[in-house]
Image 1: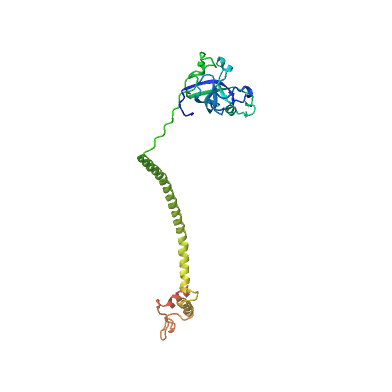
Image 2: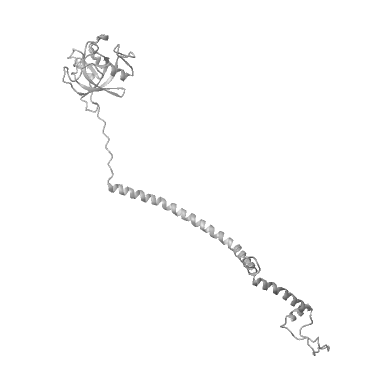
Length: 290
């Protein structure tokens, strides 16, 4: 009901009642509209029976229809112009309704409410500004106020077209690429620096490696893969004693170039000297003279 467009709006003081024909607490009988007393059945001193609407109390809405006539004397001087059923009144004030005494707990029997009429009823009564019970000429104009301006409906945001969606995706992809490129460049530079450092390390180790390889090669020339002396090693070891013996004899023998029948300036034929410059002994002789 509250979604319907209101046709009248205002503020009034309200009280509560519960007339179910039991006669308890001044019960005046069953509701005049012919419907049993129930939650949501309100009473007005002048509005047509069957009128529909809702009230607002502390931000909460409560729907109603006019099903009875009242209040009586409290409506005089336009003081109380609406009677609310006891159960609805208890809900809106946070109290409880006593089904035995037909009263609302808390002791507060009045409330200021805002009302909205959405449809006038077809029963007995007068549309428009309310008037006190049985005082049709005493219009309570202050109980009616202009309808509040409806809140503007929020327009739905326009949905992007397929072309706009595609352009947005391309723009996002482009932005992602631009962010990724500097990062990739930095990674490449880091890898280049690491490679350069590795090359420098390899360069520092190359001399040691080459020297070690040379030493290993020298060793391998004398020994085989299994560590035993090879043919080259054996030959080398065999030549060393021979060379040493030859040097010994060359050192201790007579001077080079002496031969039988030859005489030197002193008449010593066997000791006559020859030039012998190309002989190994001549080298030894020169060393002996020093």
